[in-house]
Image 1: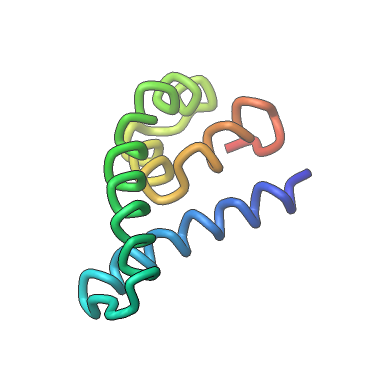
Image 2: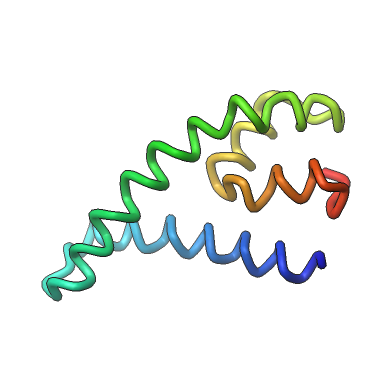
Length: 90
């Protein structure tokens, strides 16, 4: 089960890389551009909103607010959900 979540976390990082790549090297392909416009707000809006769920989970596991913030912003639910489910300790 840990491998599944690690792959999901890698997918989240890939999403951020896709966003930053699109910022610095705008896509000319219409499909990639449309996908970028869908991914960018999802990552940029949903990850911060997830802090309301991840902060209590991370605090319960003894993490600092800074650690929780960074992990949530980078990995989103692919980090805090397996922590909540007991797949990962932190």
